[in-house]
Image (tube, rainbow, N blue to C red; front, top):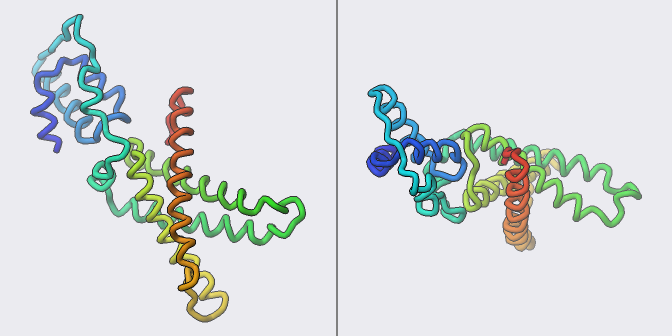
Length: 212
């Protein structure tokens, strides 16, 4: 894919290539690598392509921008570290939920159990997406975040099943045959939670604090 973008960008001006580097969170990772490679080659050869005053540096932004609903961006860069991050997030989710379960009978949590469990879940996803950005040096898109969150959910089910099995000294599946509707409820919650995270991401971008 990098070679594909190199061919595509070879006639771009330096200004346009620098625009891609400066807004790398909006572009495919291979496109960013290709832009950087071309600029480095031009620098070594003392070549400079100056943009025409009438041309905007972001002329192809809509065409090159990574679609928020394209899962290919996520899967093309998926690695073992993403499995580990998802598993770690599932452990964090389990620990936070079990910790809250210990105190949920307190009077000041009365009527707030569902809200707090939802906020714990959202917090887990936010932390997961921050780690993803730190590992990959770019943000995941909406479709990618949903798939990563579904992976966290699967690991969470396994983790909870093992936890209850160890406590009761017998195998217990967290979602039993009468409770599979909870899984689909979680999927809907993930879609809603990721929508809220997208709004949060936009707000953080406005204040120049792009951590998601």
